[in-house]
Amino acid sequence: MFTGLVTEVGRIERATDIADGVELMIGAPRTAARLSVGASLAVNGVCLTITKLEPPLATVQAVGATMTATTFGRDLLREGARVNLEPSLRAGDELGGHLVAGHVDGVGTVAAVEPRGEAVYLTVLVPKELSRYVATRGSIAIDGVSLTVAVLEDEGDACRITLSIIPHTLNETILGEYQPGRPVNIEVDTVARYLERLLPSEGRS
Image (cartoon, rainbow, N blue to C red; front, side, top):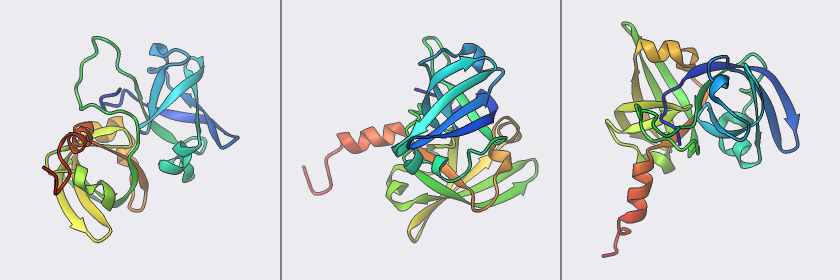
């Protein structure tokens, strides 16, 4: 489990094709020190397992459904690319964002990046099938970053959400690099998922 609070922006030092996926060696000077082999690490919001650790380098592998269901299969994992990193929660850690599982629900697309003073208004198109889990002033994770939905609008085959990104978040994550057209990993609020499961289906008592 994660919080959506990025601890470090890492750098992909090496990306190696493996059967059905890719192996990533990531430079993470601050984060690697608290990791261990077999531990979980969220990379752009995707929960992966540490397979090798040589601080400041951590190695993870992404295969199968992870490649097809996330941005990892879209040529963003080139050497030199920067990635959001967050180690999994440990007992006693503060929960400062919202509960994030590291299980990506879908891939959205950056529609607009609008600077407003020192902040940036980021607009993302969310797949229509996920719109039922998104609410104004609700939580959502974009590439592993816990954010609050400021505006929500339905639009054809997607819903359009606008997020206000403060300067600290722009500086401490990769959100400041976004340009229109960029694909992003989306994880909806876990509470919304559980509510759907617990509440009666439409038309049932």
